[in-house]
Image 1 (cartoon, rainbow, N blue to C red):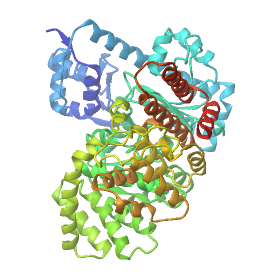
Image 2 (cartoon, one colour):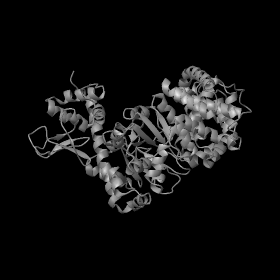
Image 3 (cartoon, rainbow, N blue to C red):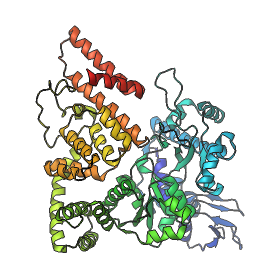
Image 4 (tube, rainbow, N blue to C red):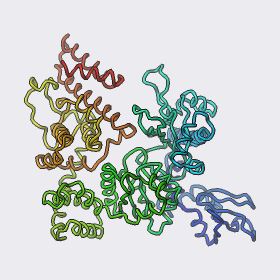
Length: 638
């Protein structure tokens, strides 16, 4: 059947092929010429080299031949494009799955091509705006304040998005892009109502271009330039046909070759885009970061294609420590050695490199410790009496929970030996506890899978069935759900958010004002929020006490939450905005539960109550927050 090779597959092949190495494989000698190589052109006779070979393309100034790796193989061996692609795919370990040549597939390929063109031209437009637009003065001042030069801006395609939606629509009209294509690209989003104007979230922001592994722009991340606390610090492109957050690492297109040619093939993983940019600007060209979401399993698998090991350089605060431990466990799970660099208090990679220079950063990388060493040291620092038996038990249990993820016997033995030495216990004793932790993890695996966020409909089937949820005095006695009953998605996200942002005054205020216990469906969530409130009130061991009372399945939930971060689906928002969105979801879910328990018979009373709940749900989900809050307060007072 006629067909074609998906563009994503071709991009994967190009990302893995180093063109200078490919040229050498044909017995052709290369000479270094600056950042590129020079060579006598293999396609015509010459004595003086006139052909340059770049990592992505070649060009001969003598005969005019030029192209990428596919073109080079086609010319050298007289192959068709498909045959050349198949040959290179085998060399770099990419599987080619030919797609059927049907109209729908062609339309999808056309849309992808248009979106790639749109992002490339829009990135260039944003860059021009940063350089010369009068309204971009604040962006240029910000760049100067952060010591981000014009050369860095050009290298990473940093730009400025005009404030008004009219300006971006004018650009689209000039370059021939339709509204539907702008919606498909996520640059504009449709308004709530048919006659409302499009929503344009990038306006007035400093723009960072997100590229795929071939260096093609596929998305944007916009940083706010004002002190407006009602807006998220970063506004990111939504997922599109060409952009999937879990499959993109910021600056991997620039870091891949640096990683492959590094002595230990070690990648530097940072938290933020500016951190990565600063690393590259200072010569640390193996740095990458996740894009708009927590560093996940797919990011780990992606980086493993290029790196043999990683060093994590996260912020030196509590959230950064928790993130490093979580991400470190993901790398151990794929048998990649992982180290963690500890920065001075209050520093991030950008600030350290700007104020102390590359040598100070290099020193931090050199002192980076294993994930086990980092975790034990960080957890012991949180304990009032780290040498007490209960503290030792907590720290060792947490460390074993990370080590148990590692399938490599050699790595595991080394980490256990290191942990035993740091804890001051016999290695044999720790190995015995490890076997118990391993068996417990195997037992928890099926339950943990069922505890993952599910669809709202399925989750609601397991929720409490008490009526009059805001009046406990009138509610029937409700037993806790079975230990294996999964948490509703919004409640799972709530627990993650509360723990990730402990001590946040706005979140504490919103929780106290708008989250009465009866709104929560699952007893675990009620227990968790009670422990969280106690911890906020100064009871440092509140979660430890909770853990001792929970069944095994829910202990696994608690451990996962305490090692996690804020909900990833809300990561474009500030912590307070995330909390407001979760409050909307929790209240709407609660009202739907009550509405669902109304008698099925159609009577004036039942129909009126059903309509009332529908109206309240719509207001809570869609109205401005101030109006929704008034309704929440009114419901709590009735």
